Image (cartoon, rainbow, N blue to C red; front, side, top):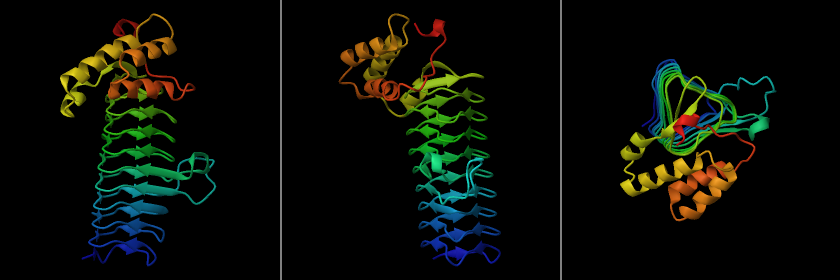
Length: 266
């Protein structure tokens, strides 16, 4: 049964699913769509062409779907699509897309956005992503499954973050982060593999060992990156996690990759 508090302002044209709970002083705009079991606790605003997936919970003062903070935005119709079973904590902001980014911002399923996190226009987030308190994403950022962005970190526009990557707290990320990588620093440097995350996700010892070997080869000082990637692909062609790293680096030659300090690469 849908439960809408008397003080909430829900537009008559908004689509509200079964079992939705809308708490005090929430605002839901005419083009919003709330899936079954969505809960807006209080003072949550859902505006624009925004879709909130089933059983997602939004906490007080979250702002979902207001116009992007992009001076090139001229009011074109764009979307914010939020998947199912997400937790969106207090003061989180998420903006829809722009013409320059496909007119859509997309968030996957089972993600956690802690207090004050920001998802800018045209970002693409996969499932099980975590943004810790006050983590901020600039426009067009892409984050793959199971990645974590630490508290007070800032991610530059167009950056890609691979699966199972870990961004340490208070890190400035201006280059792409490989899958399974761990980075930290005022300007992020690759510190190694996210070994803690790999163990928590039940990667076996053999896979972790192969990843460590491949990591050392990819970021060695001999030869070019292309040559090292070719060598790793030949040695570990049947190892899916290793090949994810190879393909991630190879897929967009225009992007720079966050790398370790020279003394850490050996």
